[in-house]
Length: 366
Image (cartoon, rainbow, N blue to C red):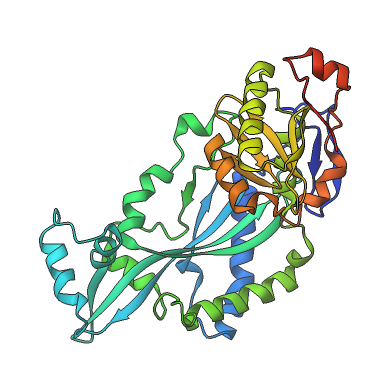
């Protein structure tokens, strides 16, 4: 896949137009070893911040054909036997086909399990969580670390098959967000008793009022890891910059279809905003200015399914684009988008060329 520019993990733009494929994905063995090392570095930081965990708590979820590596772990939230959810949970397990008022409620109730500890019955809600590490598309280095909120065990098991990459997909060269799961401890995810034993104890998920203590402690540990590993100095938005430039610079759209989109958008702008000016179609972009607003620039990503890039946000569908314009969110460029502007190809044609091609006799420029 041809790219005009790449952006490395340090945020440096690289001219790669002569390179057949500038995307470099690390091999699975390398990625597993990296995750093992990261686990070793994280464990003392977790302990320091009050989270009791050990190496067997963590499994690996890798995107063989994309940039994400995950440290997958399970947590258990203690449930008091007097909790009103207990009766519904017991009903959920006795009646597998019974659906509660919402899918979310069903997932939670089917994720509450009991275990025996010294002749005492303990109840927990079992959840799956992840520490997410993103690699740079160009040089394969880590650029970002984040977390995934708790997902009820029932939902995780139901979704897992759809998340897994198939053998056929794994041997293709098409970028894919599907995962390969590796468990150093050979966990059987359907063995609930075993999963509870290796799960990390946590308090409830964060509420709107205050975050869970577990989440605060986890974020502190990850911040320390960022500093210790040098990850905080990497460009967390480098992949977004590279992909946005690829969408804008390297897309070949159907000219007649692009002009039809331009006409439809111009008609909408003139009817909705009589004072609009500077509406024009240059190269791969449609420009306009609504008085009192910043100049709008809509880059055509794919005319076939009407996808646009506006200030770093990908929008699908002309109606969605119109809606964003009316809400003025279309002009709120993502901070990193400003950095790619000098690298956007100058695709502007002369006025005569625009007039002669697809009838752009009304194109004007500010």
